[in-house]
Length: 117
Image (cartoon, rainbow, N blue to C red; front, side, top):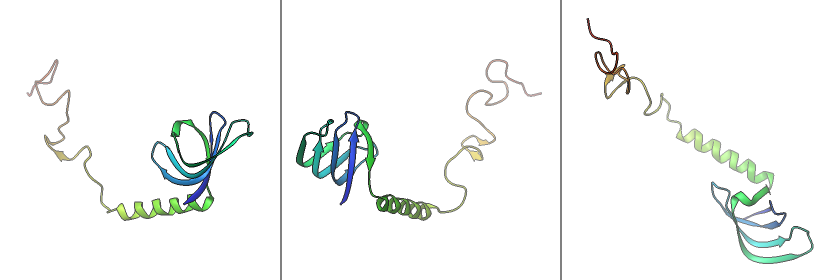
């Protein structure tokens, strides 16, 4: 577990061991010490859940950030299979080569469309 500190927008601080964190920065902490916004009162909590949009800043050790960067680099390299990639625009798709979707699908269709001579 990683020890970290969060300061909330309302001034409260939470120090504890990071248990979980999701993509919305919602955080679950264990063995928490909560401090009120004045810094006068302290509470010891076994667990705390902090909603991500209430966090003003988050402090975690540099070693953790470095580890995450390494893991992300490794995962990107392992997912890279080469080639141009999957499904995109262009090429010979459903309508054959050069056929788009929308206005101007073919000759003579739509308002003011071209006619084949």
